[in-house]
Every structure is written in structure tokens, then in C-alpha cells.
Length: 354
Image 1 (spheres, rainbow, N blue to C red):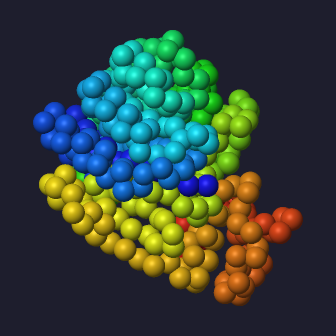
Image 2 (image 1 turned 30 degrees about the vertical axis):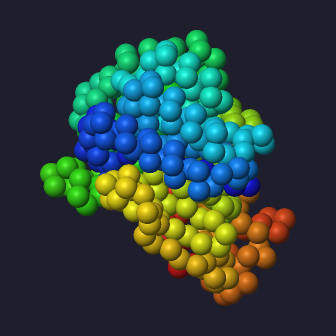
């Protein structure tokens, strides 16, 4: 499979926990940026894609005509005859019926909504610019337009959040009848307002919240197929699964990373340079056999039920055996998987292979 990731780095406001590459929305800069993406896409003219993911940032912050220009340029540049999944990220405050109609028109068949919490006070404390009512309105509009394959993003373990409130949020999320849910524990990263304000998290509470999520989601028909992701039957994210299987993907947009024809690369994060064109790729790494093996192990073990093929552990047999003996990993039908007790602390296991 071959995927395409398109990075739209604009946001109305940067969330207090976010360390992703993003900038404040500017309509004139956005116009030039979308044109630059359209030009960049032509370098891959007629390449056949299986999945597309437009993320950010906040792609939905773009106005209607820029979204249409973006999608039109992508659809014209690539061969989409075998496209299986076309995802567009959005935030509730910048969603509209007209935008949903444009997404439908150009073949987007999956949306990912940044909900994060169903408590307005917590949304405000996280630096989100939407409220819960706006989310409900956006979700109803999306379904009205015809979107059914919808992912919800939620964050847990942030300051003052209780286990009971998290249980309420999970039950609410299940009631929205969306077939995919992604859950992320709050991580306090450097160069964020949370870090500067010495915000801390409670590891024990986050683990309890994770276990509560596993309990509630599994009892409501969701399969826990990746460390942070749950889905109803046949609704797993194909694009992200492509990453976890260490398959190829192209990258458009400033700061976006790709992996194509044995090379890992990153586009310049300088928006001015990206718009100007010329040499866009700034970091290129040729992936040798050992690197491919290590990355395939680390990524593949994130897939809870699928795991990584035992045959990929050619140069890691001793570490593999140690982790199997310690019951951190299990072997089933030629596949190596994370032990259920170590899913939440998977980094402890995965780091052994680096």
C-alpha cells in the first residue's frame, strides 16, 4: 500500500499541550500555502494511492474555497482509482455544512474530529477553542451530509480530571455512534505552555483511565487494534495501519515526513521556503536492512492483535527471547505481540529494540 499525508499546519490557536508544528491561521499565507501544495503534488503526477490523510494543525480552519482548491489539486495530481480511504481532520469550531459538502464532493470518506473532552471547563483549560455544543452540532451536520466513518480524538489524564469524569466521557463517546475512537494520555512536552507552567500528570491515574477505556470500549463492540486506537468491525484506520506496517507514504506540506523507495525524508519546516519551492526535502535517510528491521519491530508491535512477524527479528533474537521469557511479549502463530499487561507501558518494551 502507498499512502499520502498532507500537512496543514494552521490553527486558530495552539493548544496548551501541543508541540506539533503549527502556526496561527493567516488567510493570505494559507492561499499561497495551498498553491504550493498543489505544485508539490505535481512532482508525483499519476502515482497510484491507496490512502490519503489530511492532518495538521487544523485542516478545517481553511475557508471553503481553499479546501476545494486543496482537494481538487490532490485529486488531479494522483491516480485515485484504487483509493480505499480518504481522511480529513477537523475541529468542531471550524466545521460547516458547506465544508462537509465539499469534502464529500471530492471523495473524502472518513473524518477525524478533535473532541478531546466533553467538559467545557476542561476544553478551556487545554486551550481548545471549541465547546461541547459545537462538537455536537458539527457531528450532527457531518452525519446529515452522509459521513459515517468518523473518528473521535480524546485526551485523558489532564489536571483535575477524575476517573469518574473519564468514565462519563467514554460513555458519551460511545453514544455518538462513531466507529473509531483514538485515546491519548496527556504528555507534557517541552516548549509548550503546560511545560512552562510546570503541569504534571499522574501515571497511576492515567493507567486506571486506560484500563477503564479498555473495559468500556470492548463491552461496546470496539476492537482494541492498536495501542491508542479502537474500532468497530472493518473500521480500523487503513492509513495509520499502513504506518504501523512500515509501508510507504508520501508527504506534502511544510514539516511533513514521508517514506518512499527506501528513503525516509522530511520536508522543510520553513513555510517561506516551502512556498518558494526549489529544494523541499531537508532531511533524507536511506533505510538499510537493520534500520528497516528495527522500525518494523517497533511499529508492528503497536498492532495489538496483529503484532510483527517473527521472521523480522533476524538480528534481535536474543532480545526477543528475553522479552518472551519475561512475558512482556507473546508468540502466536508466527507473530510476536505485546503482552496485555505491557500495552500501557509499551515504550518500556519497544525501547529494548532501539
